[in-house]
Length: 393
Image 1: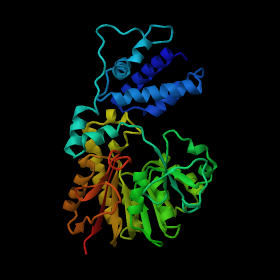
Image 2: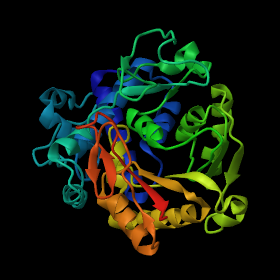
Image 3: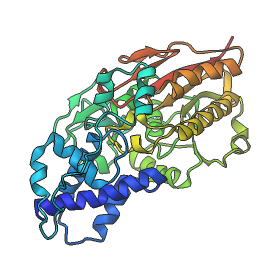
Image 4: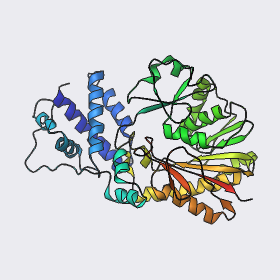
């Protein structure tokens, strides 16, 4: 593919991604995979170049662009050399017309930028959400430790006791240590949160929104496989990915429970009042993960945010029924919005008299309401909110 053809391919993909963002359609990575599946002539260098160009464009646009050309012209305002590739060549984009207007820049749609500012997120932290994320791994202590593991390249030692950081794009999944389960890809912020969860061998720990199980596996290592670990989710596909990951990691997941929405407690009846810890890694807007999924800021609207906050309240209320009187809940969202963090804790304490939110210890981050916040500018991690809840004495 010529440079101009790569620009045109990115424009075509942007059209699809913009349409999908407006209609809550397929995510960008799936659209990209499907696009190139139908264009086998594109080599690996072409695919990589188009992908990098595509995500540069997405990061450069704040509100949802009108179309792919307008989005590409926004990037051309930052990198004028791109204008030369609007050359009208056979597979390239048509020349720029005099009346064409580039898409707007900025952090996100205006309402969302305002919501972040109202949540105390600094301009620097918002801008950092649009940087590219590094690649962090957790050394799996069920098999080795950070001092003994021998990797193809040395990683940066981070604050979390088992964390290493590598440059963006490092292909760790090709390493034998990854295939053997000695390392797991996990953001440093997620690792810090797992270390802050108070667990001890023999505990009953419920991961109520386990997804594919990244935090579940970290907790299994924390327990040294000496405890009862219950992984739950309503998503059968994602929960199904946990078993092979756990086998590779040598982690024992005692129970995997597929939940039926609005009937969760029926499936969890045997653990009511029994859990030492319930981890609620709640479904959220993902505003803290824009470094990895920048198009997510185009998909969120106020109606979806309202739906998510109601779901977060519902999951917390379920967790409250599972906790032992001397146990606790750890609530986590990968969001920097107060609506999905500090506000949810205040709402929970209003609904559940006698509960309290004691401080949760993180070696980095800042206090927000009755919890803690991590962000890429101040902590060098994805954006998270985390808080602890426990029944009163």
